[in-house]
Length: 130
Image (cartoon, rainbow, N blue to C red; front, side, top):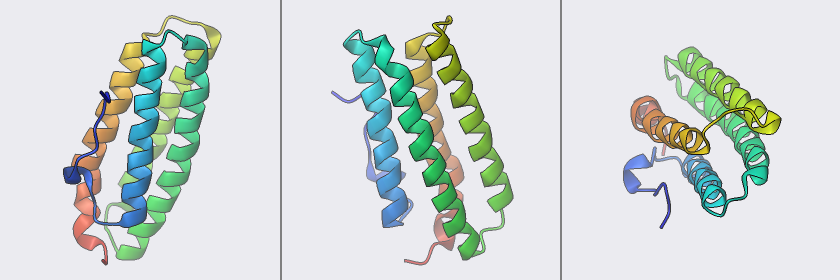
């Protein structure tokens, strides 16, 4: 069973953004699967994938919402940058073998992703042209 499940309530109504969100869900689930398999050496690589996809997704999403006239683009961009910074710190700790709870990382990623979509991303949903 997946650690994090996609539900229609996460849809912002933009096919590409929704697909990118689903892919982020998959990566968080993959991170959790690797923890369960006892393969911690793979975790920094998965985090790198999350950072790469997250960065590309954030840039895409920011461009879309900029074009819609959404008034909080700058705040949204700042939240994205702060998240990537936090994930990079976690990645550094994972790579250095420092004390970091793998479960705490996956919970952080899952909580941030779901809460960000449901609270922040849903604010721009009415601005999207379908």
